[in-house]
Length: 232
Image 1 (cartoon, rainbow, N blue to C red):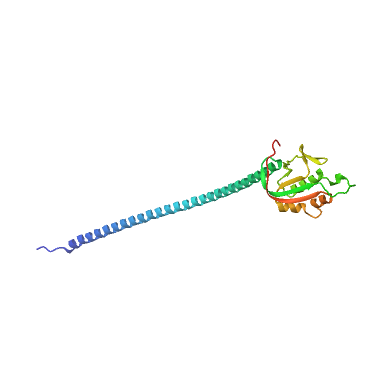
Image 2 (cartoon, rainbow, N blue to C red):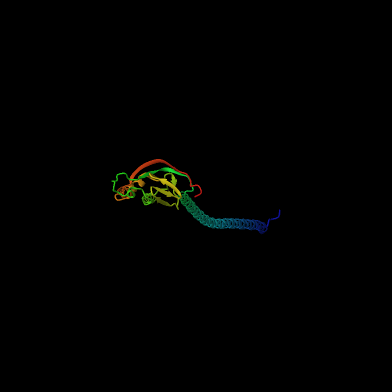
């Protein structure tokens, strides 16, 4: 039997161990590089997602600003429309008021009825003209009623308009070409309490006419109706 050389046995063993160590080290290095690459890729993805999120938040803020601006515009438009609606409503009311004043529309409502009659308590030497109702007496009552808020006025059923005229001719008065004898019944649509109070003031119209020998009576009315003036 030949004697085995120790150097020949150890050298291959060392080579095997060294090869194993090199292979293990290579695999470990490769795995480390793979893990590092995986980490880098995950970090890149996370960074990209964060950038997208930041960009999305920026876009959201811009959209919110735009939305607020549009809401402000809508609010302004609504205010403008409300003002226009109120303006048209006011114009409609003014138009209706002028139509009533011109006698173009039918009106009805509560109001006041004032009757003016010629005086009767006169002596034989008195001037009869001092006891008759004249146009200035009618004018005073009509003007006071309008000033106190009357919407429409009529005399003996004849409705007055913006350019009506009243002329006295002895015991009768002529209104827009139509004659009316006494007594003169002046009807007015409006608040009866306000109209009555204005006529009954101390030193007011009623007191003045009574001092001028005119019989002056007032009566509240619940339902006065004036038809439109035909051809007015």
